[in-house]
Image (cartoon, rainbow, N blue to C red; front, side, top):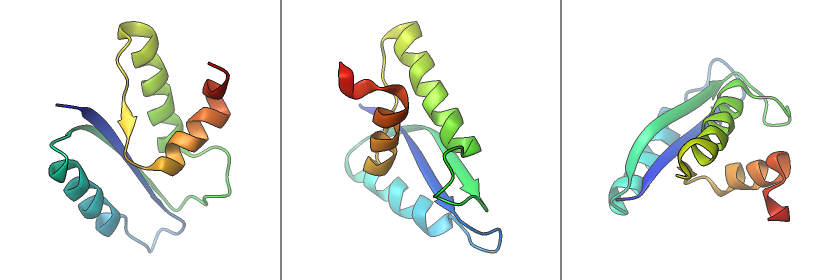
Length: 92
C-alpha cells in the first residue's frame, strides 16, 4: 500500500478545506493509499512562498527521504511542482 500525505489550502479564515479534504481522502481510498498525514493551511494565500503546513509537509518529506529513503507522496500535483522548485529535485 502506498503511503501518502495530503495538503490543502484556503486563502481566507472564513473558507473551509473540508470539501478538498473529503475529495482527497476519496482519491486515496479509491487508489488504496494510506494517508499518513494531512496538512492544512487556512487563511494563507497561494501566492505566498512560505505556507506553514506546506513547509512542514516538505520538511517531513525531505526528512523521510534522508532518514529512511521512503517518500511521502502528495496527491496534489501542484505540491509536487512546488517541492521540485524549492528542493531542486529536478536536478536529480
